[in-house]
Structure formats: structure tokens, C-alpha cells
Length: 339
Image (cartoon, rainbow, N blue to C red; front, side, top):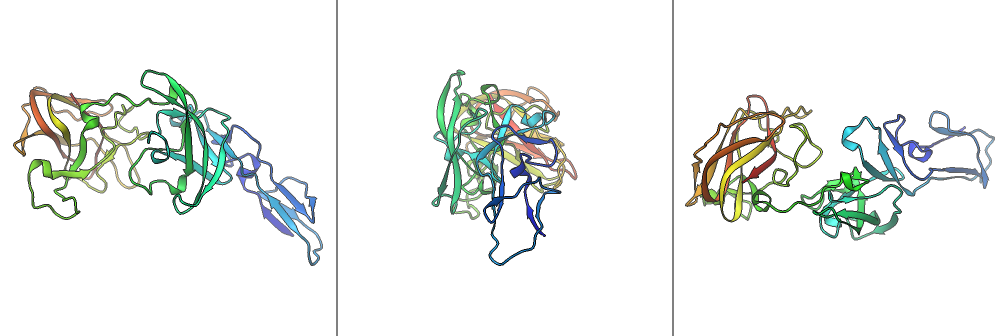
């Protein structure tokens, strides 16, 4: 007996449950024995060929390799209104560097979109990319057709920090137009590291030199649903527990500011629990030194909302959040606004 494995994706079943399902196309595999089609459905995932074998017998199998879209079960709230793309066994994603505007989340790919397959030997040591047309949503709600490129999900995050999505909106209401820039979104977001451009320790200890290790995730203008919302980028202190940490903004020019809004991260994870901090304090830069702001409201550490701090307005080139993490827990920031 020869047992040929027929994977689920070749049988219109991405997984053996109803968690995911194909929305278009029909995966049809074909098994032939000496040029004649072998009939019968797979049993326990295998097609069985039982016969008396002869020298020169030829068994061939063809798998469907067209790109297809996948929908998640309606109970998966984070994936509603979105579709994933799979070609054969390979799941794809779209990454910012491959798009004409280096942005992912302002686009949607409608159901039944046609995909073109192309092997690119110059990209990521050689990958098969998918291309097609997406719709891009502007800040005013207008839409335009734009090209998109998708790469195998397994190859993402090899070209620096960037936007990426596997579950891609299928309609305009689920896309997110790029908002108008703010003081925070234009700022250089960083952790306090005192590192030089060459990567070594800096001999300069001023406030502006301190904020030199670039970070991402908390000034991208995404308003979270709650403190456990990880559907979009966020920032966290990995493997730091109960310690004192800091992040900051260096502005393009001196800015007049009078309030900040901080949305704290709080969720459980296999590599550690993330909690709102025990406490925090805001500092501003003056003459390349840090000074605490004169707070007009209380410092709060509430979950599932922005924690707003108002202070006497001032002009500065940089702000720094100094954070004391809870004992035995790490922490992070989903979004930090400055006004």
C-alpha cells in the first residue's frame, strides 16, 4: 500500500475545524497512477493506493497552488471584517516596505481579488511574492486603487521595524486612514539609553543625548480598545520586572505643551505578565537637563482608558516618562499623546 498525504489546504480545509475557511476558489488535487486518475476520498488525510506494483509504475500528484483568501470564524472578534491570504501551505502578509507609501493599515483587499504570482530572486534571498490591486483610504474617506505586494509571512521582519498585517481589511470600514501628524507622532520616540550613534556608551550625559535608542509602538496614533489590545503596535519593557524604566520624545523643534495622555498596557503573556505601573512621573528638558513638570492633576494608572496629566504649560525640546513597574511584573505603553 502506498499512502499519499493530502494536506487540509488541498481539500478546502485550512484547519480541521471551522476556525478558518476559504472564501474563494476550490482546492482540487489530482492523483494519477500511470496516467489514470485515482478516485476516492482521502481517509484520515491519506489517499491509499493498494496494488501489485511493477517496475516503472508512475504515481503523480498535483496540488492546487493558486492564492486564496481565508476568513476566520465570526467568534474571533479581532479578525472580523478581515481576510488572510494563503498560497498552497504558505500564509502571506503585507509589509510596509513593499507598498508604494510604506503603509499597510490604510488599505483593504476586497474578497475575490485576483493575485499574480511572481518569483523574486532578489528579495529576501528569493521568495514568491503575490501582487494585485488594493483600495487605499485617505484621511477624508476618499478611496483610490493602488498596487500591493504580499510576501510569505515566514520572511517578514528581516528589513527593520515596519508595519505588517496578516489579517487584512476587506472593506473600507475596517481600514485605517493615515491621520494628520501630531506633536507626538512627529517626535523621535526613544528609550533612555545614553548610547552613541556608533552603538557604544556615550560620553555625553545630557537629557537630549540620553534619549537616543529609537523605539516604536506608542506614537503611531492608534487608539486602543482596552489595555489588552494588541491588534496594533505597542511598546513594552521585555523581561523587565519591578524596575524603573523610561521613555521619551525628542521634538523636531521646541514645542509648547501642557498635557499628556498615556494608555497603559495590561495583559497576561507566556513570557511574563504586563501590568499598569506602580507609579510614574513626567519630566521636561530645559538647558539639556531634566526637570519634573508642575502637575495640575493627579498621576493615575488606570486600565482601559487614557490617563491624562495636565501641568503648567511650558516650552521644551523633549519630554520623558519615568515609570516604576509593579513588583514582579513588566509593563508597557500602547499610546502616548502630547498636547
